[in-house]
Length: 348
Image (cartoon, rainbow, N blue to C red; front, side, top):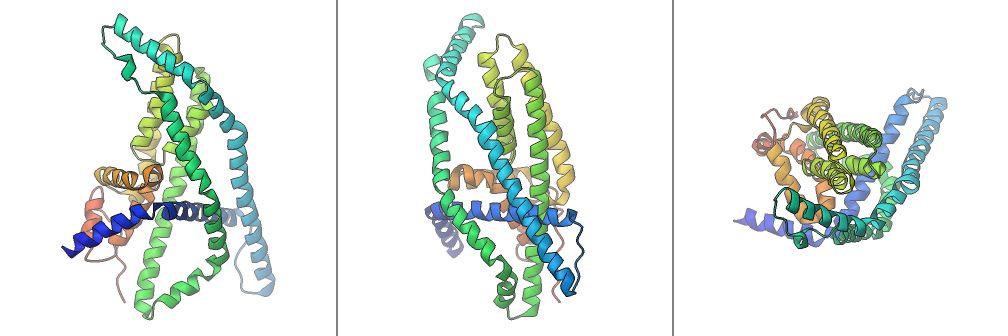
């Protein structure tokens, strides 16, 4: 009974504090992503660690260079979005009233020619839907100031994280155990984010090329949506495919373009999302599909789109933690796809 009360109270606190916790989560994700990019740049730079003073200076120089390269990478992505993708979104939003009319005409055509009775007045108003999405994005945008403040302080204090962590534990055994868990989460999260981002990026680029080849308007917008929604399991793939297919159904003069759109996008999602991604992630995402869906619904209900976006990374962390304790290993087994869970760090 006490467990149920504590769980209910925790859910309530997560919901009540969402305006603070979501920006903190976004800031943590961006901070983590920028550090991961910096780590990659350090690996490709011609530097080998050494204890002498001259090489320490070189170490600091390469660290600074890695951080600068990371900053330029992030700024380049932002610049690309502002100059290339955002104008396409503005143009698409300006066309929404005309698209609504075409959708009603398409529904009337189906009713008259195929005999499918469609009440055109009950069709979704895409202008209202887009306005609601825009309002949600605007809400997130207003919290970006808080996100950047969190990120700045994380970067300022990250050099003290290890010493603070060591001071948390008086027992050497507990410190080693906790360090092992954090290192496991760090490794699995970096691997997941690297594989997911790489595959999502390739899928988005190939989607753009395919849509351009068959002449679909706003190919850049649809490719961007493919990339972003790839981070949302199952539902993301459905959204990524259905939006351009519906758009071509309403706007194309024949069924050829919608069919080609559906074939190309669905094939890319199956090849990259269902075949290649599980192969590269391996045990990192050896998670039950049912567990992923339940987790997606839970965080989506609690925190909306932000919760859906971060649902898998949070589940990966829970999975790794549960696998390290005898009392919670059964939970890790239930969360896994086949019962194969990470090895437990033996206490010394």
